[in-house]
Image 1 (cartoon, one colour):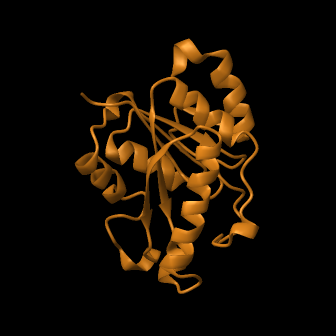
Image 2 (cartoon, helix red, strand yellow; image 1 turned 90 degrees about the vertical axis):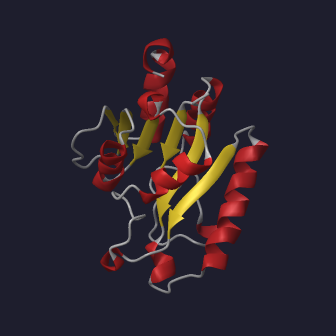
Length: 176
């Protein structure tokens, strides 16, 4: 059986994007993120993070640094009853032209190989055009853009994660 899935970007959605965040002490959860992921989880979605982490490829931090932060972040979600099934990441620089860096679909293809996912009933949430383009390229049915800058072709758009939560809570039965 295929599962509804929420794919979510990390920097700018899960945490405030300070640029190349890799230290626990610099990681600040975005207001509303726990409520947002809980809402999707309560509505039967499995949760995956898909994140470009070119700081690894650029040498700003190591894979070990990223994994340490990721393990801590997942534990913080678990304390709130939120299960992140897996974190998919691209460690490459943009000029590497890899198949996993968003908006390329490599991370979604990997998820499809490992898990039973119904893309026709899934969502992608991101704060960059590349996140929304990934959703379209991978045929993820719905996408939400967060932020106050122009992002084209999103199903829904909100200035903040909290505004998204408020809208989805009010329209739960109709949207997710």
